[in-house]
Image 1: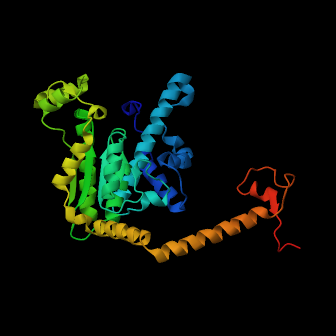
Image 2 (image 1 turned 180 degrees about the vertical axis):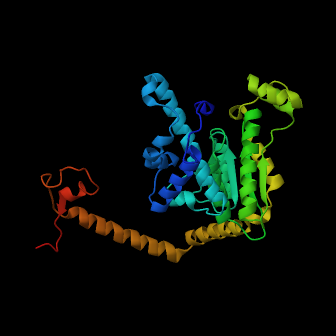
Length: 342
């Protein structure tokens, strides 16, 4: 992201560019129009923000203008994000859904438990654990934006179970950046979750890989950049880190954290459902009556399919092969003549 500090603050009639952004964002939200992402809101209010632009486009070179325009766009998008996050934090937890902003990182298909497994990188090991626990997955690619964290919170709130905690389990690189991802997410989630569901404890878990010396010795490590060294050396963690990709036994560490921190009683409903489903399938497989009925149905389906295939048809491209290309146009090129046709 560009260097935002270089842009001065413009105030018009006592209103700063941030206050103007908040105002115009609120006005846009009142329209009820959906967008795809925060930048979608920016495009809707961009023309209103021209007066607050802190540079004269005609007084600078094309190259400098491009840099400042990028700065300006980033600055306003950050302010829009802050406004939406503040609205969410005030209790309007459906704000992002209403404007059509969706998380591309949160996978909730078939997830039913108040557990989210967060990973800094894609890994099949996490996916398998999520399936077994009926938990959601969140695949990050660095620091998690505030609006993305609200989707984690909303998922947890929707799937809370009375008398049980909610859980967020995080796996990251073993380095200062990975630790910061966990701490930043923990702070965002805990602060808001405690307000929205004060009766439920949110358990944030960072999956550990062992003691520092053991980790550096066991896995291929790399020399930290200067910024990382400044964070780790003062607390005695040396000068090396480990990428998540080279932790070959990551599933063992995930399992260990789950078994240590997650209360197994939260899975009663899921366990009963899966046990009943298995028994149901076994009962069907062993039922002679069901097998007979199933065979009869298959025979009926085969007869009808053969009958349909025997009907003559006409294929005509003249009427349907037209602009625009649309759903159903190919099927409509064929007319089947069955026995009921005159």
